[in-house]
Length: 116
Image 1: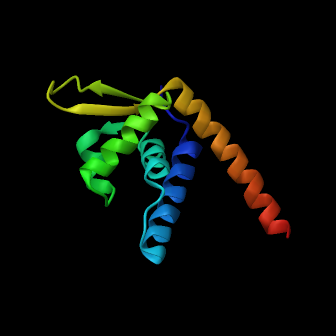
Image 2 (image 1 turned 90 degrees about the vertical axis):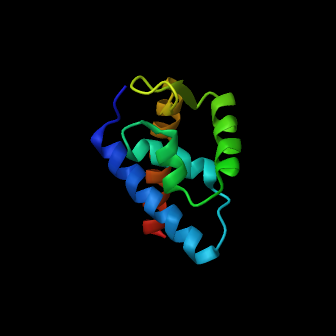
């Protein structure tokens, strides 16, 4: 399943905001959201090693949050087709639905914030 281009743009912008928040507040309580948005910004799937490279947290912390996302049904972990030793992480069908819903809620939030 391929993400719509506007979803990928949204996820990229929101991911930049997460990274800005992490720099400003010096903490990262948003690792699951950051993983979720990272997948969204990259078309819905990417190699586990790329996730480790792009999120400044320990592999153990990332892995813990990935297990939470897998168990909640938002992402799936698959063996990569080209290299059986590596893992591919992808948004599940439910993950795509949740991302769409998140984007819709975020847009409503932004509109109400601009009106206030």
